[in-house]
Each structure stands twice: as C-alpha cells, then as structure tokens.
Image 1 (cartoon, rainbow, N blue to C red):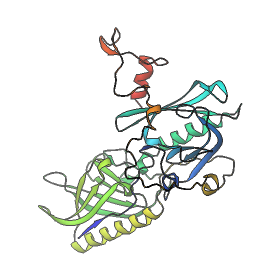
Image 2: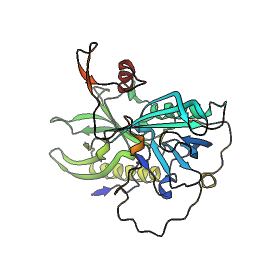
Image 3: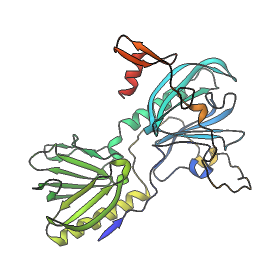
Length: 346
C-alpha cells in the first residue's frame, strides 16, 4: 500500500524569482499577508521606480506600481543577512535603505529597498521582525534529526501544535537491530524518539513528506516515510504491531496530511498594529500580453542587476590576508573580513 502525497510543493520561502506571472505573486494556502508598504523603491534593480512591498510569513514581494510585471519574490529561507546602510536613490537622494543579502542555487543576490516616505522605520522593523519570526519557527517546516524534541519522555510542543495520537512500541528500522520508541502524531508533523535515548529522534513535518507507504522489510511489514529532496531525501522505516494497527496509523497520518495541506501551519507569528486590506485589493491587476512564451527563463537577465558582487562569472583579484595566512578575493567595499564571517555563521 502506497500513497504519493500530492500537494503544491512549497517554494515561496526558498526561492528567489524575478518578473514572475501574477499567479506566483498570489499567496499559497497557509501564506498570509503581514505588512505592506505602498511607497518603496527597488533601489538595486529598478532605481527611480516607485513600487509596493508586501511582507508575508514566507517571503518578501515587490512590484512596480506602473508595470506590475516587474516584480520580485524573495523567500525568507534564502536570506543570510539584513542590514541598513546608506544608498543613493533617484527619488530620495542619499538616504538610509534596507539591504538584504541572499543566496539561492549557490548564487548570491543583493536587494536594496528604500522607503520613499521619510521619517518612518516601518520598512526596517517589519522585515527584520518577520524574518526573525521565520528563523525561530523552522521546526514547523524543516525535517530535524537528533534535536531537542523530547523532555521527560514528553514531546516539546510548538506554540500552534496539538498532539492527535501517541503510539508506543514503534520500532525505528534505521539500524540492524532496530530501536524501540514512540510516535507522536500531531497537526503539523510526525515525531519519533527512542525509549532508551531520547536524543535519538526525528521530526518530519507534513510539508516535507513525499510518500507514505507500507512495504515488506527484513523486519517484516513496515511503514515507510520518504522526505522531499530538499529535506534530505530520507527514507525512514517504522514497524508497528499488529498489522491492523499499522494500517490504522497510516490512514491517520494521511488524513492529517490532507487536513494540513488544505491550510498549512508555517508557524511564523507576527502581527502589525494597523489593519491590512485583503491582498487582492493590494495587487495591481494587469492584462497578459498576447504572446506565447515557450521558455520562461530563456534570455531573461532580470536577475543580473541583483548580483551581490555586481558582476557575473568573474572573481575579484586575489590578495594575501595576514589574518588568515592565505590568499583571498578582494573584499567588496563596505564589507570586512569579520562581517563576512558573521554572515556565514547565520
């Protein structure tokens, strides 16, 4: 018995996308609008262009007000550093701006946003606070091995989590002998821990499950959970006796997965004081060109302006670093060796 879990795979918090169709600017199930600012300039790639910035629990979106097809979607998982520095805006001149350094598919991108409304810190406070909330809620979204999941043989519940079932006598089949432990089936994930060693555990959010199936193993009939590739592509086997109970547990997991998929809980909790308008009232509608596009990425260089190093396929000149005792690329103006170590340590 096998069930491939059909769902709209989560990309919004992990990808950086440029000039996407309107359908990709709409919020997916579980995504919610947290803040919006109506007078924001994309100083890095569209200097002089007034636009709207939307902050959700998964990403930052910006689009031009005059031409909404010029837009950005920056997932919070791709963000490695957020800071404020001076920037030269065509609309405001020299002013304090929000700098966001990101990494996606081994490429670094830099985004600079300037608030065209003077004397307001809202751009900085909203983005920083929501990103912090995202970073501290990764257990809702990421597969975790050997984490601090259990305390006194009880699952440490996440703020929005509820336990639906606790199953004792579950064998984890990852070793030759197998390990006896306990299942916790909740509204956001499946957790297993060993009875003897609570630190031997695994947390599998529903959002990271690829397949759930029952198949034969050298230990007998087993429940097999496979995670998505971006979650490590793990194949985890569990044995539950008797066989009828195993079937019941699988049905319960699949049922909770379907409920979760209809309205995922991503765990990012932050609320601004001002009441926000619905997203469909904030997104400018535009008509599609009567053109057939065969390859969305073919010849598209929208991302080139956002390269963090300001260049493509080239390296800076090497220099000898006395602190490290080896040759390194010339550090970009505005950065220090210490600040780069802080970025990589996030």
